Image 1 (tube, each protein chain N blue to C red):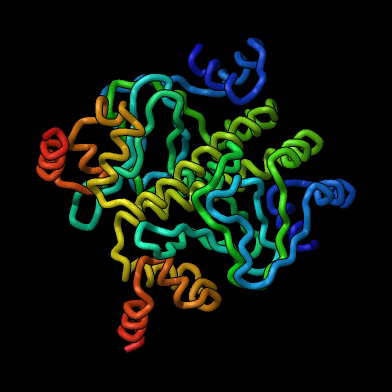
Image 2: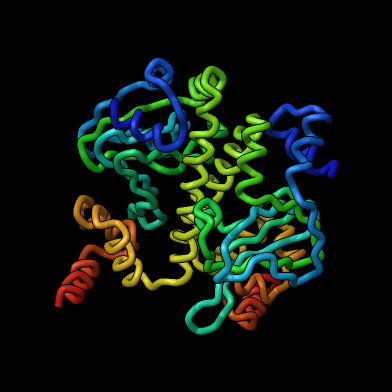
Length: 190
Length: 190
């Protein structure tokens, strides 16, 4: 769990003893590829922190097509924030894209953690601030860029995105058919 | 400033004396309709809390058309979070839609506020958590709904949106021409 400590160190000051206590509030979960951590229609009990691997969040649209709205790799959090805060049913699914190691925490345990270690309020404030900043920019891209431009944009900004994420999931994220994505890639290579 | 106190009370416990101290970190700004609080190309120095009135955030696209990405009414915050955290130039503008009363705070003063009143870390954590939750859902709607469905969705979820926001700004938010918005409204009324 050294990577989690190194990650926290970027935001807050915390000694080894405090870190051990913080860590004790989390459950370490190891999952295979394509494991469903949360299914739609289930109460969203937990937040997930990716120690190693990759998760995605998706929904199934009216036509039965999966649409991926978010990926999380190492040091990113994932949950359905709206459903988690209210402890209500989610209409998203969360699934592993790769074999992954996850830290899981539920709302009640997170409240106990925040009570015992108020410095974690600052940590989570900064995490949500960054996540919100990223989504503000993403909404602008959704307004401004064509789907082809979005692909180029994500490829440039996040090289891991193209290297790690299977092509059919990139298509599901950008709203392409896998065939159309192949065409774009061929066009960009030429 | 009773509304700001009532707003804080929803998230944290704070007595009158503490509240007076918290408030002293903010600058009260009164602006007329259409006042530019932040221009694109300027460093994003401040966060704005709407006590009374309405703000919008927009950018000007390649064709010179204004695209509004966000509105904030009473008890909402607005800034370019990415540029604010990094104190860099923003490529958004923030403008009042109505005559407004605003609480303004800059990054350095906010850090001093958080140091003196750590309970405000919790407040801002919850504010960003809610803002992020709202944007997660909004991204899903941008994936899932046609622009006509988005209009119906926003009208239903936020009646104030249709009542308070001028029609040309609703069009700029939804990516319609004002003429197309009139057509949709006529169609929905019939």
